[in-house]
Image (cartoon, rainbow, N blue to C red; front, side, top):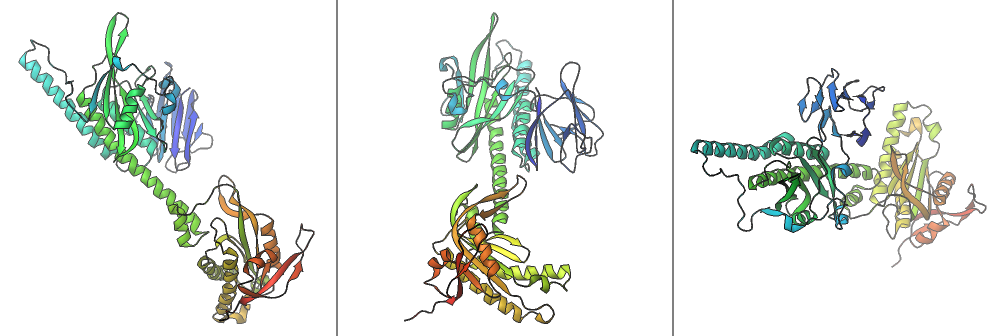
Length: 537
């Protein structure tokens, strides 16, 4: 069954084609594509009476492109064709990878089960770059050829060579600014098919462990499976050289040969992948000029792929930086992005200090304020609190109306997290007092807040739906901290017994009192924090 591999800003998906399928932004389209540059009913892909898939533009505003060319009428699709609709890249696949590449051989596990071994004695190898003399492979005129025909043959060879050398430059000009890897791979293959006589071509890419898998492939017509010599690909991987392999092929009573070229895709010394092409069975074997051409294309592809990968890393880092700068101080966020600090995905148990603060009498304070005034006030208020929290390297868990929840110990911990949290609380109370001195309190009154702090184990991780997630902590420790905050009077900082045992040597406190917590049979002991302990010399 043929299918479409669709890539755009929303991600990547593979969808099987029906006998007739409409693509567009209209909800009734067979394939709904979210792209502002696509028309409601943009194009249609359908089976013709011969069983071939064709594509037809339906009068779209921005056009339908196949292999970078805008189609005026319906055209037949071939395996690996790239369809461009607006900012969306679509690859037409009439063959599955397992139908295209043979799966056999004892060494298959090294290359994800794709590369069977071959008898080296039945192959002829030419390598590039050269390490010694190589058998010439440019076709020679047979004896007795007239001089004019010989010159014509030589001119044709030179013209073909110039075309192939120019192809590498055209490839760079055509996709030099492209950052979508799928588009890069498919345009590289389209460029190879344009200038090189080949039946099949594919690109293998290496993962972090050096194992390779098929990233893109293209065939001409109904080709048989591509059986790739494992030994050849392994040598390309290890020695970073391009190789031509020629294998005798018997078709009935006649004997011909089929050749393939394997070249590495490199970024400096780093192996990004391997390009492999196979000649038609009845075509001429590949020669050195074909090997050089494919090596030039692979060199350009390596630069394009490396640029695209770097751009993707930069984009991911920017998203990560923006995400963590909401939670962490700028310095800590940068350390997470650079990998110096690890933030584990999924839930994990952390020993943390949870901090709640909210404004006392907030409802009556805002009774005579416009909504825009309330918003401006809260932004000023939170600016003060967050600045203090970041100075003490706490993280912002969430904002809740006039309340804020902070955490020390997740995702990044320090040995003195409870001390940092209490120090931040005292500094916030002082900062709010100073804020009141510069604020017109006659109309709306002074800002007074209560703070509650608790230290215990929490479960930390990303919480939310598949569309939106945020880092947070949950557990009984959070509920206790919230309850302590609710009983803290204006200007007060209350801490739990668990927090007290970690900070009692650093702060002066009042005697404890018991506070009942919903869901607990026993009350929680809390202490009031007066200020830092005075040092005696």
